[in-house]
Amino acid sequence: MTETTEDTAELALPRPRRPRSNRDRLIDTAVALTAEQGWSAVTMAKLADAAQVSRQTVYNEIGTRAELAEAMILHELEQFLACVTEAFEGGDDDLLGAIRQASYAVLLRAQDNRLLHAIVSATHGADTELLPFLTSHSHGLLGFSTAIIREHLDRFDLRLTPEEAETAIDSVVRIVLSHVMQPGGSPEEIADDIAWLAGRVLHL
Image (cartoon, rainbow, N blue to C red; front, side):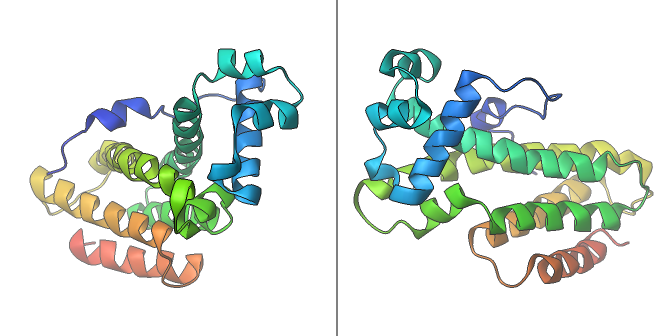
């Protein structure tokens, strides 16, 4: 069974849309700078200039550079989590369809995610500093994604014990995350394969 880690609590469940704040705009700007120039080139001063705010505003809204790195990762992972939530809250009673849609949406977002590409492609020096943040908080994404799917399992007549269902869902989610980091095909192809595999392990 999957244990909920402390990292899980640091990810926020998707919230209703709200007006974009200075913090949101600073994080977006930091993501763009990282994608264009690499994390090693991102300083709080450069972020302030790019966002056209004072350096004090950056420190007030974000904090330290390490806190900026964490904020960027959490912001991006929450977007992936929103994809999973939307797929399973669509009101459809097709479990495999929801798994396929969630997988497709996550993989499609990963395919065009500039920050993820910058992190994964970094090979040396300070540019690799974001990878531990991604690895650490991916456990939170794993825990929340598994929890979202688990919440919806009661609608389906699964021929599995709760423990077996938990293990099966955990395995499927881990496969999706592995393809996020290292794609093995197009989002459509991988989503189809994952839905096929989920059907076998869930006995659907």
